[in-house]
Length: 548
Image (cartoon, rainbow, N blue to C red; front, side):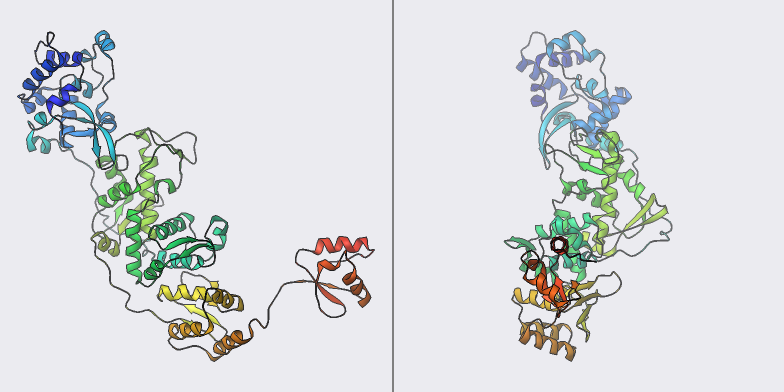
């Protein structure tokens, strides 16, 4: 906090003389240094508690509010509650004499020498504050701060838990396992989004975006010439137990630069000349949540945050500088009156989005679709307390069927499922039934390209299935190793003719031969993929109509 003398030096001489008049000091014949010294000596011995008692109610409340905040408050936040100080040059001040008719409690306190304004460093950068100089603040003592406390909304648990409450899902680790496995053969770009989503238990795009960001930030994915690929660090995470994996993901989200605000449904962030710190908002929201597993109304949490800590993501209290639009309406959401549409939506999204996705919060209807309730899960309480969980007690083996299909239960080792996905095709992804894969020549060829040879593949299947590898699968692996692809099922278009001479003509004619594929006897031939229109046009020019 600044001293009285330093604070007074920030004023011009005219303002110093106005303050002096309030304290019955004639500073008209003094220069600035002399005026500052005289005022500082006088104000330092003011009985502030007595003075505040004689102030008008609005001004007294403003002083007590500032004292309760430790003697300083961001200009925008304090001005929102108690008004601003008009900025004037000496000429305008002499004409209008604002100290005679102040427009706000803050302006009245300004011209009495009780409140000052300056920039100062904070954890979030340089912020402009209204403040009380240290000599004046010391006059209040702890009693004044305690007396200034006002009743603020608090959270009360629901008497009865929601009837439709369901246990929190823990499948974020399953979907991230899928994404890491897909990264072995796809670049995970937006052009592959539709293909990837069909393999996820929860295809929500914002959820997928968060998981991929957490993976990148943790160093589990790296860029290579062939695309994005998993790293050794990813393998270490895959080998952890489910509870440990969720703990690591939750910790990653708490420190992530992934911007929850700009992923909040209904909000559109625009422009590059402003920024917000998502970590600041997460810390505040997590800090406001009760440390127990009781159910609470989301509306009560929003009311408590708005009353007790409204500027939780805007340390300067300024609601005019962020460019955020409502997706369903024109214009920007600016001013404190937009709090419910920005901050309120963000808090709601944190609970229904990231915290629910990571199994840290359960959300249910309290008394209808718009009246939601929430509670922290036991794993969230342990996470917030910094208690690292134990590993899984049991990891069941995979099941290999005689038809070369593979079932992997949800409780199975995620690293094993990641490896299965490298050597087999995905057949079925279901939140209830086991993950289902199938060995095929294509999947085995892909495994071979990754350096996974037949002997290593056999060893993996033997270990992952606890020795239960069907003889038919062993024989198929041996034949594939020795012979490669021996049969292939294809969907093709076949051209049939009545006379072998017609087929010979088409084979030998330069206008049609490039459109024909493999012969299927004397009267049939395959048509190359996508070449049917060209073949039909060319044969018509030869005087032969082809029917479909």
